[in-house]
Length: 505
Figure 1 (cartoon, rainbow, N blue to C red):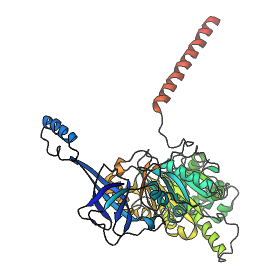
Figure 2: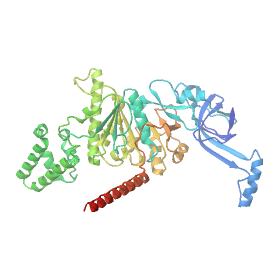
Figure 3: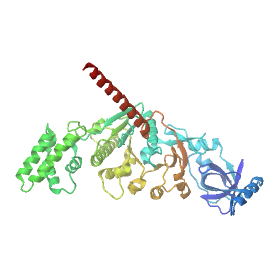
């Protein structure tokens, strides 16, 4: 059915049309051009009224409203439509933009379920459902899991808009495929994630395996404390790393260095204090007897690594270590398949997907961190070695732009800050200005999906993971009421004991 006509100037990438009804932003339409049918996406929609155009006061508005209601030609529905490609080619997964723009007068048609189904819900084991098209809810929206592992993924949104829900949905799909996923969980959002193949781990750092400068970060020596840094560096010898009692051996070396090196007694004393403090404060985290923490990751599982108990510096050192080791294992596995490696016993024989929550903390713009270095390396080399990187953040403007620009796929939810939107625009060439302007109007669970994990840019509503209780807001009022009720019960109980004691006296 014809719902509009191309008017004014048209281009190979966009047209303006007059429609017979208001069209929603995000709705798909067919442009019946002279060279074949094109699929278009409504990117801007406006409604105007001739009768109500130049109203100067309320009475005139009421009168003009009555005129508008009886005049069937009063309303003007104007839309801007982005051209996505020839329909028949899109159904085969190929994007071909017309060389010649549609002529003014070309008909705009409604897109049918058959038209859209083959494009947005392709068949194949690599395609999995994440939701439905926002303006065509009967059409599934599927994503290509292969592409997020090989070309990386960014999930960007304000707090509470559904980032952790999408991560959980991806986790369930990866588990169903017997894939290996590692989620670095900075706020303990995924402890209650209900998937069939879950491996939940508390973060461990083996101090034996760290270089001296990383151990200094973990025990929280100041970066500019040069003498303390030297004390630790000189004391962390190979014999200390191999010692049965790691901490005792390290402390003995630090004390000895302080006694034997002129001018370093006070610095050695401070290092000893830091070591002692770290041993007690982080006894559950710093474990010299835990072996290689990477061995705790299980292949074919969704591995949630809880780093909530780590300080920011410790978490940074831990994440960098995990990324480095996983990438190295994947390199060894690939090299072995090609007959180029003699090393045996490495892990991760199949691809691994890693997700970093709060990515702006660990991959910051304008600041060096070890995690940023290794995340950049994974982003550059991961495709060759089967290691994917996912970054999740509510502050895109604070993520290193070089890393963000290497994310081949993006899920963008509600974003209202201009600088966040501009950072996203610079990282996503396929996101038009008009679609960018819609980010502030998205509701919870709505997302713009662009990049290589979808055939075409789409606005979708993400399915809710109903068995997941993570990432939800606290119900402060209920907890206050419950706490007050317990206080009342405790008070009555105490009064009863007092009265009983008086009677006994």
